[in-house]
Image 1: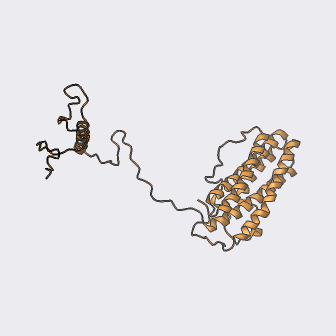
Image 2: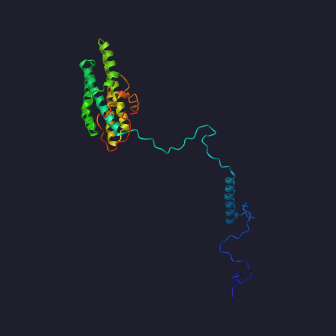
Image 3: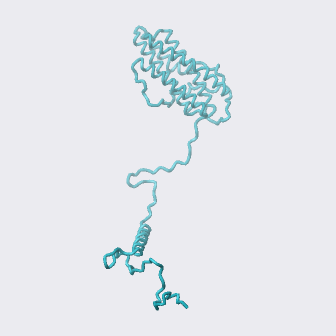
Length: 283
């Protein structure tokens, strides 16, 4: 019967080892060479590697775990808390109607002011007159589009007149100054174009605000397109009197160049399937 401890029958009771198993006596993992200078066996390297991992783990466990505090010691900078809340959207159906009606009032004011400038012959340069008349006609072309929009929101656009507040605050004072210098044609022309620039900037700001705070994608796109037209008007007029064609990279909106009294409130109940509570006057 074969002795399992000695499968060769040689009398050696050492247990059999698998072929290719490293049985060299390299118990010291730090002894990287054998006595004869040869590299240590795989078992030594495994021991060395295992010991390295153990030492690293032990060192990490011994390091004091520093908890991140609200204040960084190096700079004193307060670490901001992660933002998890979304600020409420400022728009509402009432504001949509306010934007539409206010736009109508400003477009009507622009048409009236251009007509006043032409009637008084404050702009004498022929090329300036041609360009200004084209701008005036575009304002008139905007009105049917805005009136349709207002009706879709349940409003009565026929009840909206030229914006009286802006007229008193911006137009009337400028007209008085131009009349006072009527004898100086060159100065009157510059002052008249400057007045038109002021109004174009005012309505462009209003459209920029409406393009960011209206409640639907379609309204935002519509108001933004109208605003880009007014910005081009600004550029054309600025070029007439040597002003920078683009004095700002993006159309500014705060406070949208309009006082509270200049905004036109809804004149009928607002029609909208997405109506939310909110002020009728944009912030």
